[in-house]
Image (cartoon, rainbow, N blue to C red):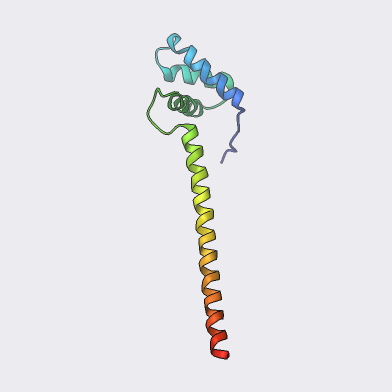
Length: 107
């Protein structure tokens, strides 16, 4: 299995811009993507995903934008933390209720 390579935001930005600017020079967007991907050293599929995400972010294509994805992740993380806190509080409440019952019967 090949190790994934992380590209800097500047490289991604430049590659996507190159695809958008060179679109008229190629017979299709895919032809532009494959040509430019070879030049920057990434796979065509990786560059295609970057281009599609940019199109979603700018409103040219339907789908979840980067900002919406980040917001969803933050909300899911917060939801998970709140569920954990609720479970802890529920267990603590049960523990103290049982302790109170035990204390009443011992008196």
